[in-house]
Length: 355
Image 1 (cartoon, rainbow, N blue to C red):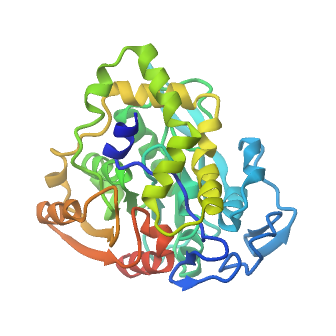
Image 2 (image 1 turned 180 degrees about the vertical axis):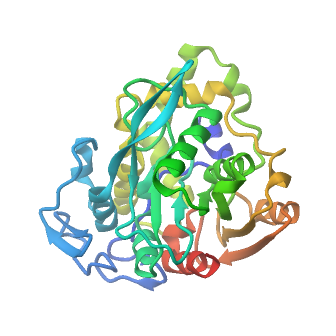
């Protein structure tokens, strides 16, 4: 399972400033959140929509462990997560599941909406550092959870294969956005974005692909595992040691206390009661293989890659640019696998300039 995680370009949704010493965006922060200016030790203070506030409330559908998270960016964005009904298919019938996302504070018509996907087995909390900058720049930004991950209510256990994930995203777009969008996908989320753009080109005006993991051929032999073995392997994927190790690979020069806090953020969605079933379903379904879809993508595309990514080689981004008919490429300095954390302001500006 560890091999599967990195082959899929996985890293936990570990988005935040390194409290005390880590960058927030491109500036060094001396003791806490670079947006709300609170101390790193004030873990009970978080940023609300209009700034910092005491006693912010988290949605009741989030696992109680959210209270243990210290990162002020994560706490702020977690308070804004909501659920909206989105259609899915279960067998031959159609129903709705309450689907988690962060909706924009203001709907704007001047630019195309920006829809932010996330990495493999992650959540919308991955965008906690970049999201404020996108809103400050006046973009209509949606951070959405891909079906099967994040904080969607999957009590009905809908299928979570690629086709189901694609259909769910289309129904969310059709019901709530319904305008050509700029679709942003990091790591395996880039495969999800390419898959979606190839199947629903009318919904996507532009693509932004960050450290794209697009050449893996699905979950490979893992799709052939006996079901009990698959469940055992997925349980390992949720384990704290593996998540800690993946976080260490995703970032450099990070204290253990920060790694531990970011790992709590990255594991939060795994504590949902249906996470194991949804992840096993995805793994056994075969996963993403978008090799044949890449040349179908005609939308203008921005490819972003981190200078020090230890999970997806920069040559992947270069190869992808050569295959796409209308793509430009940008390196993000001083960043690893998640440049929308390591250099959040830089990435936000790239997205703003591209939309």
